[in-house]
Length: 112
Picture 1 (cartoon, helix red, strand yellow):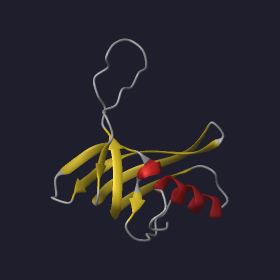
Picture 2: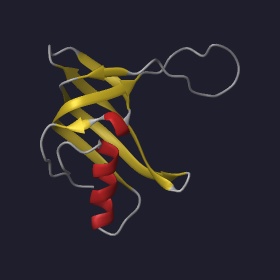
Picture 3: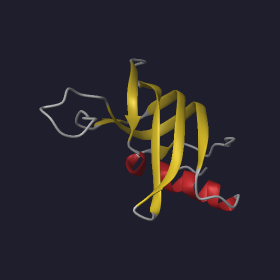
């Protein structure tokens, strides 16, 4: 996957190069120049099953471990992922990554 590209686009391009529109990846030890994520949050009332915090942006960040599902939503690629990552001070975070705003710091090779 290529540095500087939105993470969701890089994953979709990598799978397309292998002839697939969907798939699963595990990331380990990946440095990000920008990393956006949300955490589960309490529901304000009845309604949707899941509620999320406001988006947190880290620049830079380091993914320790993450699992990414590439699916199709509204006839377009959609990346859904969970994991554990660290900010530049080493503080550990966890949650749901927000793929369109995440950027790889350098090219990485992954298996999916």
